[in-house]
Image 1 (cartoon, rainbow, N blue to C red):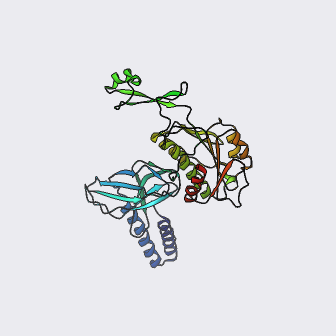
Image 2 (cartoon, rainbow, N blue to C red):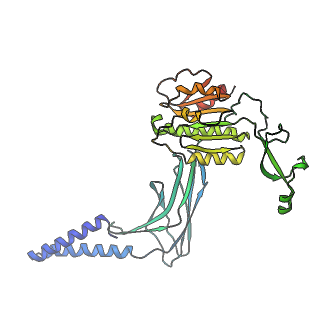
Image 3 (tube, rainbow, N blue to C red):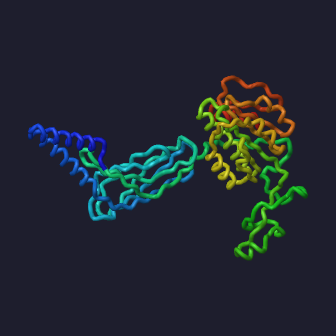
Length: 375
């Protein structure tokens, strides 16, 4: 198809031809013919369709915000002609990335890698690849799409944080237990038998089906739970970057408790986001859910949300510098420990009896302040 420059050359050539023919001047006619021939040659230049096969890889498919991720293209020339003069653009989110495709001989395969943006959390669609073939004068170009779109998941950035203890004693190894008080143990999952496991917990039906000894893994339902309430109201945050930091802080708290095999639940004003028993697999689920969380125009104060959730364990409220926290002190009667994390407040928050108030502008400040809250 013609570019704006090509359309302009064609229009001017038609006007010159008509004016020269009517006035009897051969020079404008010659210029017009030359312009029309150039446009026709440009169309013929871009007419052949390249025969290419494009395969795309994204590594890794899940990455923390700010960490590197790459797109890798494998481009194969399946035609008989040598391919050159092509520009490639890979769609990435709302923008595009220019990819340099080298000259491709018939049957040759070239691999090209490029950096993907990971400064914003969320699902980032990557692809399809658009190959642009243009003539030397920029009068015409042809765009063709290759490859299947893929999705890069940019998850919150986290830092290691210790478990926030509640007012009850708990097992240092986490909720997995074979000797918890009667009535507090429940089935969690099946796993392979290891030496030392109680033979009474072998699940014989699953063992017969898989050919491997499988044992029931039990959890102590009385173990303290960490509840994180994230304020998603846009009015609570001065800047979009403040909300990103709030998600990073919530993810760090939740992942820290889950890695120690303690139960975690994360809620927003729209309701429960994720509730887990704890463990490495649960950490992945928590980060995936928080990666897709976005701000909302509806006002859901974190304190109001916390008043409606099941009591017990430790409560962490995460809100922006403009979030409402004045009622957080009343929650101390329903939870063993209450921590309120404010993101870049414009002024120091009020004193809340029984509530640990943490005000941060980056994750390193959270790391330092969290040690005091956990003591």
